[in-house]
Length: 168
Length: 77
Image (cartoon, rainbow over all chains, first blue to last red; front, top):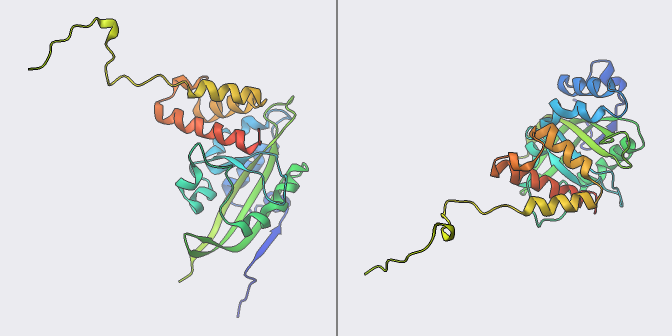
């Protein structure tokens, strides 16, 4: 009988993308991004913006940086919904609503902010509106400077949901 | 009987005219002060393909301003 751990967060490394194991759109984003010259990487985001979420480079505690942009086709929007992705102007900084998922995702952002693109796989459960959902996803996180002179960066997150099962 | 009130054209404000939006001016000032102008310009040109939020429809402008409001919070500035 096939068994698999309920929770897995693992870095596969970007070699897995180069070997053709990643989602094709994620893979073309990676190729496009990595082939850009320094200082022009942000321009390569344009065709992929619908699939991306963007967050800051601020990690004051052991959680991923707050998000400021959620693309129309972004996996986080698919998972958490439009209302989550577009909070009111008075709301607090935007983070994903599942605390455990947030904590488990931290290492990926840290790796990206250290200058190494992060490509990983995760299988876990999230609770959304009292529904427990088992999901598996791959994700690529890269850190980008908005221009070559910038003294700050932002992270671009490309997630692809591979499996989505609502527990009965 | 309804009163017939005389007033000049300069006093007339049609109700279908939307009030001018000053929100983006305030938000742009905050973004500039936070040294995040590059992000404002990047999102505006890459995603919205305009140089000024004034060129956007009210709905798209609100959406953009919402992103900028989140930007300020995300960078904690």
